[in-house]
Length: 216
Image (tube, rainbow, N blue to C red; front, top):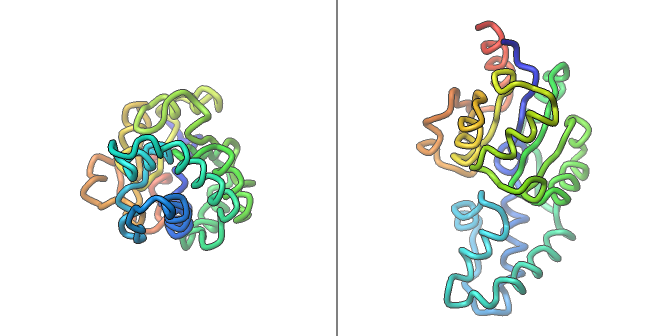
């Protein structure tokens, strides 16, 4: 059956946002004695949404700080959303070439932040729907957001592809019955992506993978 819908993850797949996330985290934890984060450390922590990220950082011993640290993060990050964030090479050209397909974003970043980030980078117009962690009751790796998107777009699971850089994206896509394409250049080690139907090293390769799926 022909592919009609391509669902993208955001951070680590379409955009490299890790520097801005790191800066916001360091601002958020700054007054409370936590060690400042490197980009490498942040990369190892992201993927499950900001609330879970803050929980990992403050730990059980400082759980009472979670809400204030989260508030500081969101305030700073909202104002510095795309200071250093850029689309990965080839993203814009690939989205242009995928023009005939319906396209959507499902991110574990909050919906408002996801939409504004894509707007700031001039990419939001390529997508029919942009969802974040608060758009549906469950986040990836739950299949719920993928299933919800299929329903919203009126698309069968066999007519859709999930594209992401993490095991959460692949798990969500597979559990929802859609084909999965993992990108190797994102935030997760390639060893975590082995369950994807395809692994690509450049987003431009997605065009050929979609063509291949349509040919079968």
